[in-house]
Image (cartoon, rainbow, N blue to C red; front, side):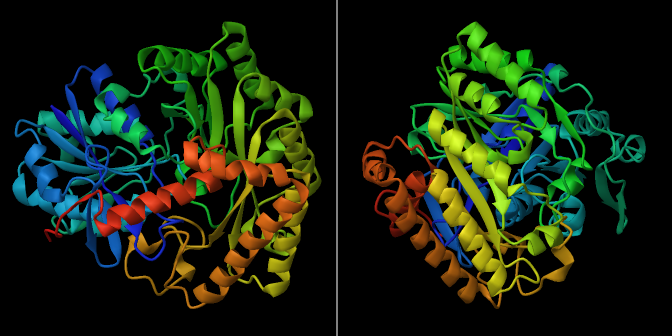
Length: 506
């Protein structure tokens, strides 16, 4: 038996809007599928998903889900290995708490922490591995877990892990006070060979009952889906250059639609949230996916929730085809309106192309989001005014929402070593209150949100009029409609009105 653990949802108490986004543990579900494919029994303890409305507070954060003690009590004593999923940098404090409780209770069972390689909200375990070994973790798995993780599990079960995995890339451990680690290089060549995520092991109903997710959730059931891996761009604030070595690989259109069709039948899911870092890199492939959905008459809607590089969407024909195939939401990331800051970030962005694509999305019924970062090192007031102008221009042509994030140094990103002042990795979210300039940046952020809503009311008043209906019916077309509902629900839990509140055990 292999036990997999998804940690708590961790929320910063002074920012219920930007923190506390619910991500289903997609890469953990992939790993569970691979474990079963290799003939091993696998159990999942989803600490958040199994008890989404249980909360406790600790050191400025609210934790949602099972406590470390409850998780330790649920572990099968016959487990051959225990794997904790480090899915998000803000969950790090939960990972640490679970590692402490589990290593104390089950000293003889190897404890492994697994990296999430396919999310910009993740973090490099290479950079934090010593903090994990200090609390009892035996091994870390960095890079894609499906192949190297299975090598480690087989070695652990055979009882010769240190000897047989010493040359395996992506595996780290400490032996006699010495850290051993080889950076990951090998990547899975054919993603179609992977089994579909083992969602039957997860408490899906509990996620669906929340009525909010990472992407805007407006049906009764949804699932995240990963159609490609990696990103070829080198944005300095992003974790993806380290995670993917700037390589992009994709599943075939047939394989992607096979998963959509299978899970729409198996789980009754009609809504899929694409969580790739950059799904539209290959325009021909994205068109093939659309054509395959249309040819099979698969009755689903899908949303590019995690974002994509807008320049990789070739033209209006592609956008119209995506709409015809059921695409209802696309997130893009201009990041800034300042060409100077874009050069610092190392991110190319074609403003004219973005304007054209957003305008076409608006015309064919695809909701759009534009994401921006504030406070990049060297940014000044003039740069921020350029961002303000770009937000105005995108709003005028029909962008449905914006997201404004204040730069935070994610472990593994190029800018990580240039920041100081945070007390723990869970503080590395997009509302970094520890930054000395946070108050000034946050004031600009909320002012720009206010301006965006006024511009939207001016240019597209009917969209503003629809938002209260979406809130009341919980059929969210955008994240900006859904976020207040999530924040309200979180606030109610915080007050203990509908939640089971417990004291911190540590």
